[in-house]
Image 1 (cartoon, rainbow, N blue to C red):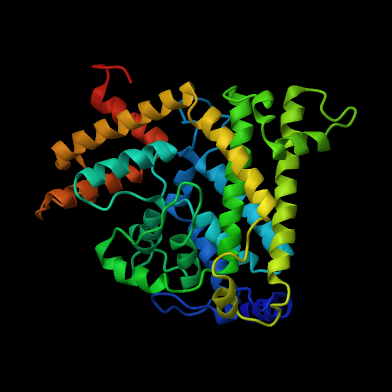
Image 2 (cartoon, rainbow, N blue to C red):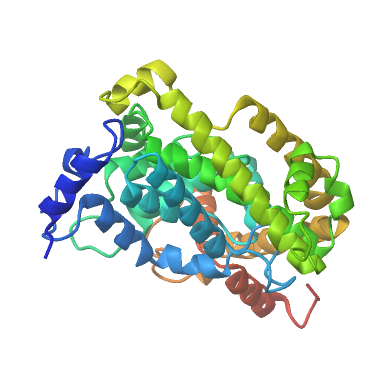
Length: 398
């Protein structure tokens, strides 16, 4: 039987010098005894998987809201796709797959119901109240450092610093980076953000953007919001289509969609691996800190040509999918539901559960807004819809 020490020795032998080695982890906020058979990053992954926030990802959606169809990606399926892509990329780059998986599985824990429409609604409500606004990266950090309560000696999951830095510094098309919204955690978050972002976390960022782009094409084609003809404007799409034009390979529209999305993913992954390997060439024996001083956070990235082609394809999706009339209708409906729930709770916070709103204490107006926001953000799409129906039906239709 292999012990944790055996696994760590294997990492030291197989991983690149600039990879994150479990034996040299930056540690946790609260000291814990090491596990006998699992590394610190393996424990992080397991803690995330067993969290309440992770289970809720199954019923949180992205572009196409849960009341539209059950085919489209949810936060959970997206998270699993990101983890799978990131691990494959990390394996080829000799990085730590356990850390990659932990960051990937945790990176979307802070998303509210109804995807980015829900995030925009909560952001607007908090800013209107004079608060910083809502950001799902910030909330993901709050979830794993405060809101998950599974251990007797500390709040949160007490994940390693490497995972927390990966969450705080996660960047995608929709993200903006800022400190924690929890007052008690702000100083800790500031200390973490001076740390170099691991290559493993950078891999998760790219896998996330890669998964977004390609599954939004898949879902967009399935929904009919975009057509193959619309995508012909993209040089990346045209190259992918050319690559699958072989007799018998695309006999149906469904098979065409699956094969072209597969080709798109493969082209981008191969480009990412080649471009990143070229940037890392000559850095053997260097530490992550040494690499960060030379290249900042740009060690893991696509080639210049691929960045340009991906941006062109993304622009088409913005125009044809994200602003399609059906998607606009869904997002407007989602915002309306969350705004009306927010008003109901804010008008009388005593409607909230006892463990959410303490009747014995006095809250300022801003504190009430944060309590309501955190309560709604923890909901799934289904829970938000059910709560809305309890308050407003049969008096009005959604």
